[in-house]
Length: 289
Image (tube, rainbow, N blue to C red; front, side):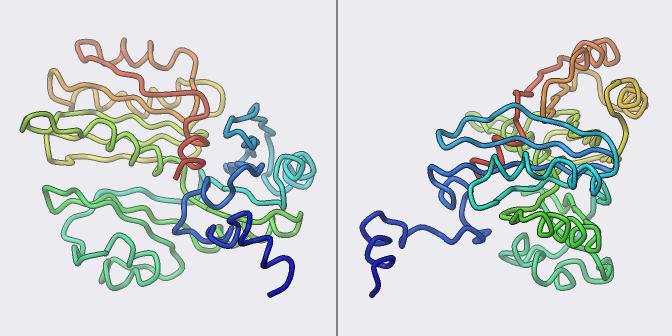
């Protein structure tokens, strides 16, 4: 046993998961270390530093082709991350859909990441990476499909500038799962609540209608908006005639979007709206999980 091994035992580093271990939480992989959070859109790159004390720094954003903006700003991102480790959110080149009758074999939500054909059957497409969330009460599932080539290009771009990918995900999908988790909490045997979920992340919008334990309709689009909220409202407006009376609107965004909650309250008048958005919500979720 060399000196490094001995020190690793004494400071408990030997008992920590490896930095590239996707099964471990971010905070266990990088305890008391600075890391970076990076988001790729079709025409924008944003980033934020996670400090040793767990607090987030200011989010920076650069408009333009992501490869060019990364080449112009990578040194700022590297300064935020010890050893270059970063978590990455993709906000383009993906599809979120509502599917039925997918395989529900034990562990299928994990198996789909390594053997998607066994879960998707004839719906499997070569050149895609998948993730799935099953409805625990019905045969519906929310399926995330990401373009494999795009993922590899992003990984290669980061590697070229000396950054290491510790986690890669779809921000909209992460926020949708978060919204479902915080709202579907049973109380004293009550029936599941009904919600119209509105998810916004780095220009992407996802809407899901849940009637008690049923997922009825899902619409997801990338690259919908930049700074103005009107394109997002246009995408959501058709649901005004389709969601049942009294259904609550649950809004979850990666960061506060000025005027959006008020505009949705006007658009869906007669429906209670609860805004679950928090500053740096997506980054916080990635840092905790």
